Amino acid sequence: MKNTLAITAALLAIITSSPVMADDTAPAKVGLDARGDRIEQRLDNKGDRIENRLDERGNRIEDRLDTKADKARENGHEKRANHLERKGDRIDQHLDKRGDRIDNHYDRKGERINNRLDRRNTRR
Image 1 (tube, helix red, strand yellow):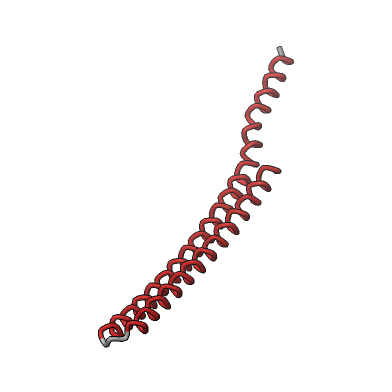
Image 2 (tube, helix red, strand yellow):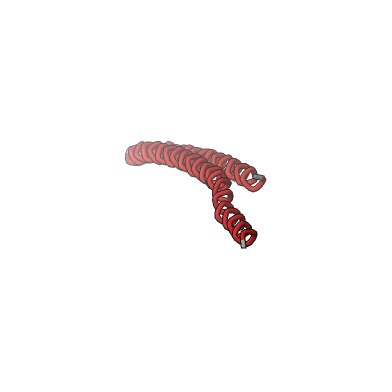
């Protein structure tokens, strides 16, 4: 009877302490995973902000040159107007491509960090 109670008490202690031991490792995994997601989101937002800023800048420059082209066309300067429109288009396209490149760079960087933290998380 004493042996049965001792064995039961020991098994009960082992069973009740095992979830506590499992919970000790869980926050570290969640912490690294959450950290990687936060870093990836922050870099993604930064790339989006830069891309939007360059896109708006290109649109402003293109609009300003289109306005000058319209004035030149009203005054009878067709070649000058065409040149200004092409120039505005080139600048706008260049800034759009630059914004896309920067945004993609930050996206890749964020994914790389998140993947690295996920791999570190699975090794634990």
